[in-house]
Length: 338
Image 1: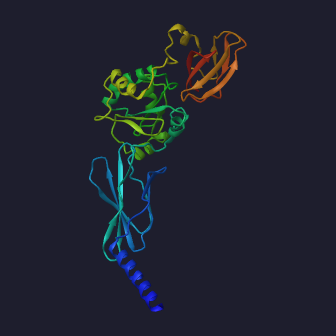
Image 2: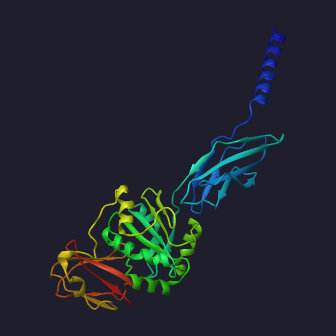
Image 3: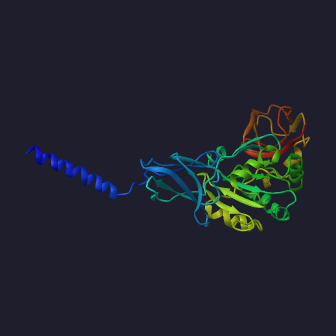
């Protein structure tokens, strides 16, 4: 009886070993996640694996070998936020055979980007997206003819959609030139939204997003997905209507702009001196609740005006454009230049 039991157990062991030999190992739990600098690929180890090969496909380009590793996690800095990125892993086993994982794809999805605009204001992409706004990014160059052709329509759409207080937040990025030249650009086209130059970190954006040709326009949704992208191909700005046609299907709503309120005619002129240095006079109604916002939509200060005109001290204000609300309605705007 014992001999029969022994032979039965032996047969079961042989059967299990045979079954294992016939069933190739598989790469389990292969995942792809975004990090601050790109994408991270991880998978469960295979006991008989000598090393692993990582393959990548970006957009419509065929798969190609990225790297080889003996580890089970791989940091990929070649992630393209504006495209679909697909990956698979092949394990090279000790006997020379290979086994591959399933394909995993991610994107188009934004990577976080932080910088400082030409007026010293901090810009954090994810901070704005997480508040529920779309972010429209205009990647431009001072000497780019097509950029100049598009600018009047972009500035007009900025006013149409609420001057960064509505559903969409505008920012422009120039990785080729510094603050001084970008300031000339803003003066020429009347740009009031944040402008980030090479001095403020624009080259980091260019590297993260693999964008080096201007103009290039990108619209990122609050869920971090990139919903519009392109320059000479893809999303192109040819007139105001081209922006409207792109925005409206996404549910982006028209909103009164702080710089275009009809019932307050000539109120902009009444704020003086403008540009301001150490102070600015606000001819608002006494006892009005006043709020001052910077170009990022951040509240600078709020107070009740106790005199007419009210003198607002701006010595501590960073250089830039500011908007004023009186009793919840737009009153005007002013520029601080020290």
